[in-house]
Length: 149
Length: 261
Image 1 (cartoon, each protein chain N blue to C red):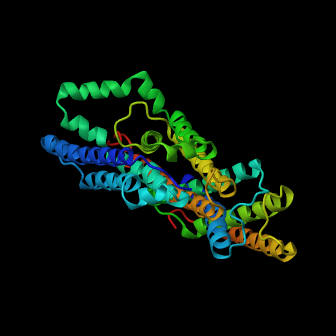
Image 2: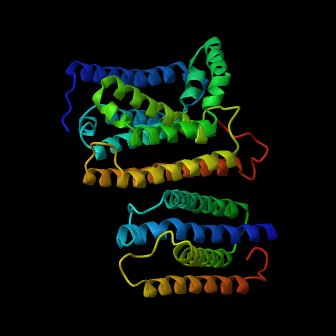
Image 3: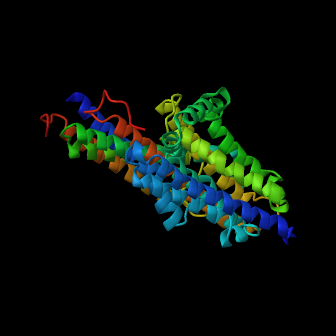
């Protein structure tokens, strides 16, 4: 069922992006490593508002994608590999967007402060590309999948 | 910052809160009794109602409420309990549904009619409810209102009553289970919820660096982070409820059936 397949892909990609936006940022960088500032006085109103929207939307997408998955599962068979491919691709794509556009182009915030950023940026963007590539490979390999597999 | 309380005023406040909580508790039990022939009432809804009353009570009277008069962090804990946790619990208990079952027909019709009036519909519109709830927060914490609230028992009571009511109206508008013929569409309610969560997060971060007058820096930092992460927990719970309702309504077999209140 093409529709079921499209939804599977979407559910995976959304979860990947949602996790990247909310959980990774929040759990790893804020809470565990304390690299991101919770807030600093030089933050502009625009940055504050966009951070808030990002954060909110990230959670919404994360939760929503899990419920989408639940709905897909109850309507029939789905391919976990296809879903995983979507997840990796979504995760990688979002991290790439975050690492390039938000960190470097718009400069809304950085990975860490008071350090030489090159290593951090390179690692962030590098792993993002890896995840994206892995996801796309998995999607390509599961492309001509038999219905119900 | 020392507070000179009119002891009688605060005692009166505490007493009134306890009476109201008592009414909420016994009223529910009376409702259960009166509605006992109308069919089984889900136990979890009763649990939710009493849990909601407990949360509201903890925020208004007792040790946390006492601490909240001097500590921004304690105040914020109370705010989360009163303005977010209690509304979520109370609204999901479906009190209006119980009331409609428990009341005699004429009274039930009157209540229904009241809920359909233009002002009621206007206030419970998701955007209005969201703006009321979010806007009140910004007003409270970025203006002199916060200080006024501490200085006067009457202001304290008014603000806290508003926080509870605004929270309940907002929660009901977004994910209420009581009958609502004018319920907003899913995209509308979702957008309002995301917007509210964003505004709540932005405010918390803003307060981190710009606390209300009289609040110490370290107290501000802790309180702001509590507001941010605590608010996250409740708002994410609300998002889960929103999607769970949608999932239940979209059950493949029951596509044709209306969602059950």
